[in-house]
Image (cartoon, rainbow, N blue to C red; front, side, top):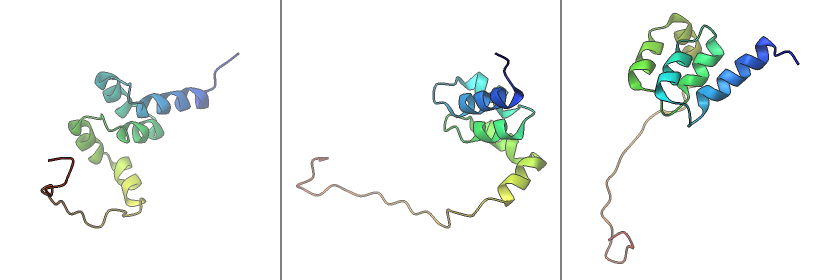
Length: 89
């Protein structure tokens, strides 16, 4: 059975989003010639910050970002102290 380019790209995109993919391989996938593979790699929470910063400089990536909805409007962080009856205390 012959593997099509579409099948290869789908496999690479799945590999890019996998939590099992090693950092060196994530770096390779983030530099892949196919934009879909690069986007999938960027979604991986294990992607190093320096690679994400490099992607932000890519003009093709900028076009992709501009087309995305602005979901996060604001974020607030609070540190709470447990109360006397808390199981965390």
